[in-house]
Image (cartoon, rainbow, N blue to C red; front, side, top):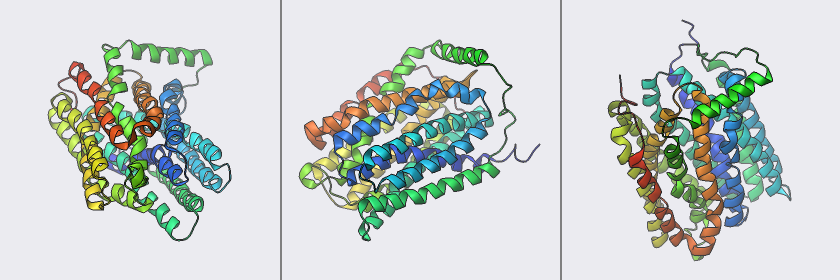
Length: 424
């Protein structure tokens, strides 16, 4: 067997999903911190950065083309290069007077490129691994995806904070930070160009005319929306993260805002330290433990513990809003609880989407699942800043806990194969 075809998953899954997670965190999370430091209002931050979810929402409309044209490997490598260009574009525009509009345009480019990369990477994952290996490595892949998100919130933000404090203006500090990470994506491009394997099932498709492509496109959608129990499944994908969708947009502004405004008044580097150290350890443990227990006992047995783990730790933010402490040990402990629960609980959500997408056109069907997942993040996130502006951080976090209730209501009615995820 060709060595490149049989290369160990450990050689490419960690780097692939780290590269998949970074542009997402740049667009969705780092941009929030950056715009907060550049004195954009919470309402505008939440509204405009939530709109950046749109490429992930509508990516199913071009996922069949990614599935049909060229190889997943081709799309992965190409999009990593484009993402690097988008990062450089943000870096160039931040010192300008109209930085908000221009930087958003490059973030849109990154968002569309990242969504396309997701389609190809997730398809590559399913084509290159057995069902059992998919279950085992889902914890690993989720861990490195989340490690990328926390690396973006950790070292990247610490670096920006250091540059802010070293005498550079805030726009210049963030511009330099984005230039550095543009270089990192060039490195990802080169690494995967030479070391990403060539699965036998990832082959260049035959040339097809436009009519045949459109027929395949239609078949993909019809086959997805006629799956058994699809209605309930889509409701679950939309509401399971209703609370998190709003929390994600306001967590960083909460940590940065003044005490008088209900925030914790941390520095940029403080936020990077909290999420980049304690959070990484907790998330790593949560994701790995989640993947291991499901691979041993199956998703069905662990669904309820993971539903609780996903949602209940959000109460830590109510505690922080009440206490308004600036003690990094206390804040880090709260983040540890929330991140471990998220890493453990999100394993169930990801595996449920893999089960739902299984069958013909699994790459495109999985993209449809993640599109609904993104819609469930986008719509609540858009109004979260306005809600917080109206009621303040404390009552906002109470509202977030109320929004976790629909997920608990839907979970008992989901169809889950008792053998799904178990070691054969």
